[in-house]
Image 1 (cartoon, rainbow, N blue to C red):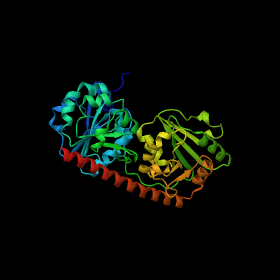
Image 2 (cartoon, helix red, strand yellow; image 1 turned 90 degrees about the horizontal axis):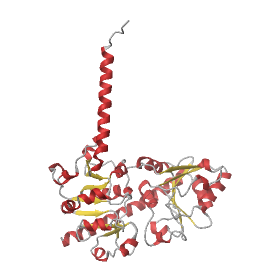
Image 3 (cartoon, rainbow, N blue to C red; image 1 turned 120 degrees about the vertical axis):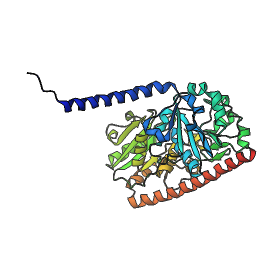
Image 4 (cartoon, rainbow, N blue to C red; image 1 turned 90 degrees about the vertical axis):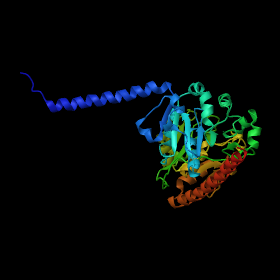
Length: 400
């Protein structure tokens, strides 16, 4: 006996097949377009509208607006800094075009204000090299060009774009070692060097905006966050955690980072239940981990990390400022980050166990006071950064 034809079922399945086909089409299209410089207008951000990179120089839809800044990152890292810099630019009334690698777009997942940003995404430096001539001409239409990282890895690419001799270009030294190696003395004399720390070269501009996050109460189970990275001494953190575990205090440590330098094998079996490892996660998960923690442990050691006293800063400090999370920091580094006992916990080589224990036992009331003091510090850092940026911009405008 033949089954009766169900017309409604047919149409339902038909529409389902069409939907799946369209979904596959857009997935395949996005993969094919990876060979081009991907250009995302933020208004089309959620539809993944893409353009061939040649249209960057021809499309009237992509014309550069008046009072615009180009933020350009050639490295495959430091993407977490981009939201902070762009927030400053927007606050100063600029439109911003961001030329950065494709995987960086998720760093803006919590940014909020995006109507003044355009994302020009690419996959590798070969794509930039293919259009370097036209790109160098196109860049001259901006008021200012911010090179988000200057180091030996990308110096040749920056030079090929004519940016070393471009008076509109501003260079950010994450490590002042590269300032000396690349001999950027003339650029510094023109106020076109920015640093993340308050060093004896350049002007300090600290990017610490990640989004509008509400201040959290202290968790009942105190939650610490630390970053697994190279050249760090974790022995004091490991031993203190194991001692505190024996006392049955309620705590956990979230370990994040790109590399597994701190692993479960470093802790004894009983303590491992208190350690959460979240390596190499995307920005939405990373931001969530930071937001949900109470304290950030800066594992800087005066013997292991001397360069952090006069050359570079740890990105964990930016997380502390942006998410308003008090830190646990060695006393040898507190002045670099303007950390005091009013806004964070300060330890030395002998008392980390006691300081960590004090953080666990801190009441929510005292925690909120510490957060408020840290928030006051971020206001000062913000204002100082704005003043230094204006100084640079005015210097460039006078010479041009």
